[in-house]
Image (tube, rainbow, N blue to C red; front, top):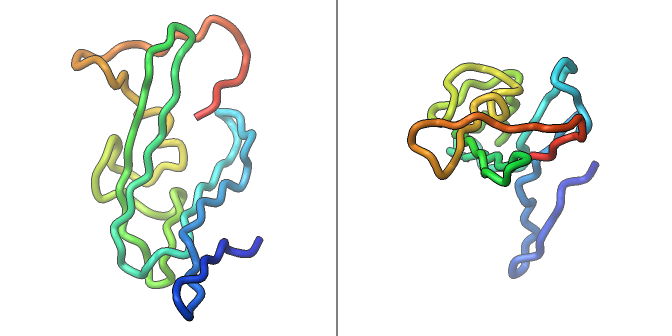
Amino acid sequence: MAAPRVLRGDSIVTKPTIVVDNLNASIDEELDIKVMNCKPNEKITLRAKMSDDEGKIFGSTASFITNEQGAVSLTEDKPVEGSYDDIDPFGLFWSMEDMNSRHGNFFVKMNSDPVIA
């Protein structure tokens, strides 16, 4: 897959790209999320957000420092700050908290329909 490119002035700039290797992964399947085409050694932040069956909004964040190639892989890189602090490709999902509650809240799921984050 070619990286998206934007023409700026006389030069072509490659835009950062998020690549998910298994977009429809179940909780027990391997998942790799990568961010590519960033500047080397740049701090980037990923955010995930979704709502439960009661309409409560849950979210998480993770900030990383890109490698020399301007990339981050959630299966290889540890966040420098955010909702979780270890290498974990599912960290953005399990670390979600209710964005409108300081006391935490449980995610309500009343059926087996897939959720989208």
